[in-house]
Image 1 (cartoon, rainbow, N blue to C red):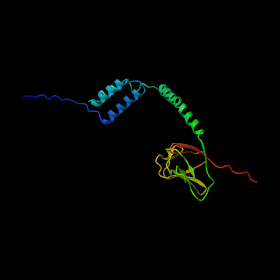
Image 2: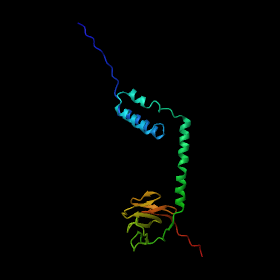
Image 3: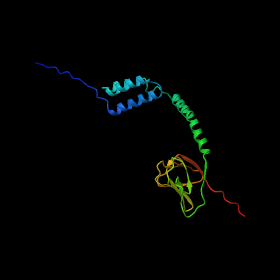
Length: 189
């Protein structure tokens, strides 16, 4: 009695990395307008239940490699041009900030906040009572946040600890922003 054994070969199931790669291609295709939202959602579902790498590759066959060198350049140029108005708006707003004159260096720090005893009193709801202090150390201006609620920023970066500031820097205390300027030197007599 002879028995025949049928040999079945099963292809390996797709790995999580392969699924993630396909999902990334689908996401990019939807972002570029190559897939409608419904098509994107249906293909995502199919990617999650695919049983073979061939099923996964079929989901992106019409998306992968369809973008040539010229279309990539065109997308880069369009992206750069579309960001231009935002950059101009930031520069325009930055140049129009009110000036904050750095005081003459003294032995005591300049306290900044809403408190009536502050050397620089800023009466704004986003400024804490004791918001920040400005001191000089070795001829350099140093700014320190005093645990304010809405933070202190220098050139868009939140101050943590003590930060050196210079003339021309943009400083923000809560929602109030200023451009630092140095005191004018008096001409020699």
